Amino acid sequence: MAILNQDSTLSTYYLGWYGNCTENCSDQVISNITGSSEISRIYQFDGDDKFLMNWTGLANNFTSLECGKMYLIVLKAGTGTVDVPNFIFANMDSNDSGKVTSSC
Image (tube, rainbow, N blue to C red; front, side, top):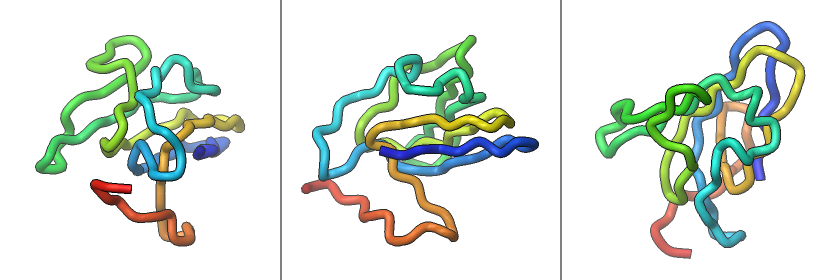
């Protein structure tokens, strides 16, 4: 589970992977994510790391996070949190956040 924190004045960006080996992974309907109203946009990438699709809450190319895919989640400015089960993100302040693997 990942708790994504908003910044009070700026959009916040979280790049990560959906799914892990410690919990059963199933696709996550974005509108069912706790705090999803604080999500500005979600990007999914293709195999060449090119922008593929986006979710904005209004015009959506997809409606669920799929296991084994990489996403960039952008939060609106604010003071809330968004709880995304099975989302693993890392940044320069993270400890070891795990490894990407094709088998568990």
